[in-house]
Length: 434
Ligand SMILES: Cc1cc2nc3c(=O)[nH]c(=O)nc-3n(C[C@H](O)[C@H](O)[C@H](O)COP(=O)(O)O)c2cc1C
Ligand code: SF4
Image (tube, rainbow, N blue to C red):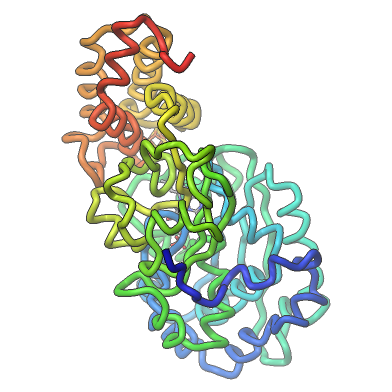
């Protein structure tokens, strides 16, 4: 097992105790990407990002350059950075916010310059107290340094950045709900179309929404050039990506690895990465891209960590969260816990999501508690079919946002891959794992 020796693009300085400070940032090449960008035209900066084929790291994997090119020509009012990151087992942006806030600020100013944006909002999950504190402190330092605010580094370009804490709702990570929340309203996802805030975004104006990790790649891309970025990875999946590795693995944590050149097996078993399954047990299944993704089994471990490669398995890399489940994991309980999360977080606007999530949670709960029936398996799949007709991947859209139609993923995976786990619960009147 050879782990690719790609450079660390977004985690190069997290080993330093003071990685969040301006002194360390400047000592390690900080703000050179921005200084370089300001010598280029905004169009040239945008072209460099487009040439890098930087896929958005927030979940959908939409190319950042293409998203930017969908905007009307000329300056646009708003750029919004999505640091809501509230999905269970997803914690890679958390690391960037706490450990390298200046990198984020620099990336944001580069993007703002390319898009000629005058105001940026960085929306950060409210529970990330330290992350919020450090990003705000970095922003204050950056203002004092002339890297944000009026006439940045004497270039004539000006932009203001506002840090906005969320209030603890997972749905506010969905970009249109986030915009509603920023506007001071309840965080309800907006009806589509328009599919992108590039058309109608914050306060009804064209807006770009990008993820924290997406933004954090920009200083490196501008400093080193798009070609250096595309030299890493393969096909559409260029550069490196952060993965939050969790569950029953020896070394859980956030790892930056080269896309495509690294497989699920490398990430989970390489001694310098996950180090293998906890207590040397057998691996039972893996959640490959956040709890809304369909699961994969041991036979798919040699799949490269690339967007198209994982999509070919009818699942996704999504939010960059990889959860390892070993042979002792109760799959009924796992599916129930995930469904319970979605039920609690459903915003309630759409009937299939609001009601369906509750029905699914209750049926799973009674199976786990030992009072389920064999007919419940068909009932579960039938209810899933109402949320996402065909229960396939990607799910068919029946609701305002994709939260609802993603709920069946874990349930369908658990029933299709581990039907016997359900039958044992039903026949033996409870969970054999206790
Ligand atoms: C229910 C739901 C939750 C989401 N949560 C997040 C989140 O916490 N952070 C994030 O960046 N994107 C999240 N997204 C995706 C955003 O809607 C959006 O696609 C993303 O912020 C765009 O940034 P990117 O193109 O740089 O990936 C979520 C989407 C959905 C449907
Ligand atoms: S699918 Fe669920 S979370 Fe999304 S808008 Fe509808 S009710 Fe709200």
